[in-house]
Amino acid sequence: MPPEAVTFTGADRRTLEGGWRAALTRLGLAAAALACVSAREWGEMLHQWWNIDTYNHILIVPFILAWLVGLKREALAEVEPRAWWPGVMLVGAALALWGTGRASGINLIAHAGAVGALQGAAVALLGPRIAALLALPLGFAVFLVPFGDELIPALQVVTAEIAAALTRMSGIPAELDGLHILTPFALFIVAEACSGVKFLAATLALGVLVGFTRFASWRRRAMLLGACIVVPILANGVRAWGTIMVARSFGIEAAEGFDHIVYGWVFFALVTAGLLAAAWPFFEREPEEHSWGLAQLEGSPVLTRFERGEGQRRGVFAAILGLSLLAAIVALAPLG
Image (cartoon, rainbow, N blue to C red; front, side, top):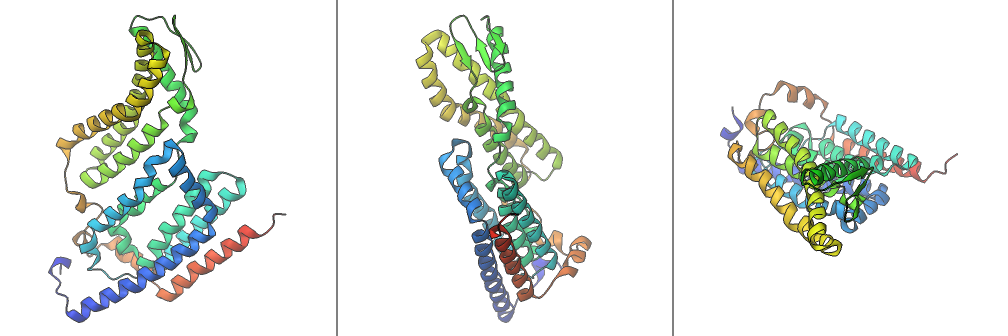
């Protein structure tokens, strides 16, 4: 019988609500334990979100996650959370990743492990069926991890090449020496802040959100994500060229003000609006239809196989707490 045709009695509803309360309580406690273990990494990430321009867009990611979960509230109300033992392995793998990152001093790896541990705990304590319903918000949580600094050198080079080429096409002699663009009236340097990584990271996150809420076709998703990578890189080169042209006409000081105001606000908004406007006519579904629905999951052979790993709720919860304790002990143990 399709899930939408099921009739729940008052007792059934109370059982479901009780199951959700217990599951969410365990998930909250497990998340708190895991966050305490990786408190240093969460502190570093919060600092980056708030204080570093490149990552300011991450501040809205928690609100996007809450919105995506809220879109599935009716479907979630029809499913009972069930603990899942393989999810504990996801938590263990994430904590191992976190430990590797901390030991090696590679923040990106440690941060990814800290976020992944919470994702694994959600899967372990809510079960694969609910994880499938919430596949998009669980996956989108990856964007809580600050990344992009690794791309800055390459993006600086690309920006410099595009800006120099456009300058020459405008009839102005321009010599490119690494990140330096020499023109008859000034020498321009493509600094790290001009690499466009902030624009790229934010646009990529937006592309994933729109692609998986509005498109059902993987081909269209891939096209949108490709555009969300290529367009910001090209647009940043155009922005750098525009700054050179303003400097030629109005002086260096005017160019600096133009670069900050126009690129920081108007230019970014116009390019983003253009991307969304181009994608709009091809939207295939409403946002609440993201991930899978109950009808699609009903009778799924893959999901049925996964659910054989269901376990006792307290046992799974205790295992996650045990892994948290073990990770804390290992992290505090002196090296050598």
